[in-house]
Image (cartoon, rainbow, N blue to C red):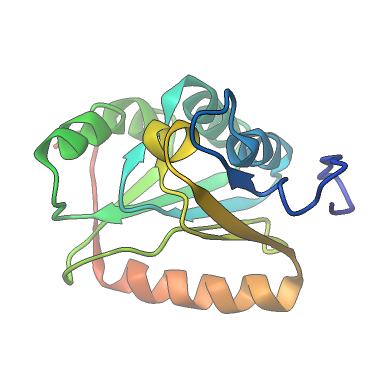
Length: 170
């Protein structure tokens, strides 16, 4: 489905970037983890609901430990107290390995996006949580295009400018 260091083979490209309720495994998660594992420079992620699970957490931590600049933008306010608590449970682990976590302060944040190495963009309905990966019907656009990635990074930087940075000491 794409070239370069990133590789995923599927007989059905339309199915390769979606999740289906009730079917074991998540094709989106199976795409995101290898993208993070192959990242070499930077990864920028926006997710309103961030409860990543072990595979995604390990991929994010490993990228940061390899020296990849990983930025995660989540909302400061969220509509579910349980999701907030679950999400915050990952913060210390990620901050300790150098992941930058920013909290969007200006209202509702509902964008779901990821840009890897200014080349690959993932944009769609998938939150980075197990519910999106395993239960909900979700779909994501995956673009291997530098110009598209640059446009998405510009939007992400706008969100970053309206976000506070979390500090491990706090």
